[in-house]
Image (tube, rainbow, N blue to C red; front, side, top):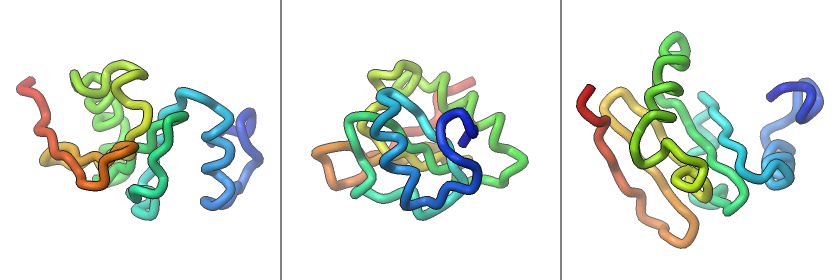
Length: 105
């Protein structure tokens, strides 16, 4: 998280209130604690990258180009888990995860 948004070293539990204020933010993390239904909110999208850190940039771009998530409207209210094999996501009002494959490249 950039220092223009929150202070350096912000703790996980303090991050969610910051996201509530940002409206429309998409936050990417490698932290597995963020793939949790209780974190679904209409103000933001959380994306948990379940991949090797060195592959993060590739999968962030791939996620943002995915037809289901390529607009802010498609992302907001969801907590997504990105894997090499595909995507799994939770969303506001739906407690069961949904899975999506990666589109053919």
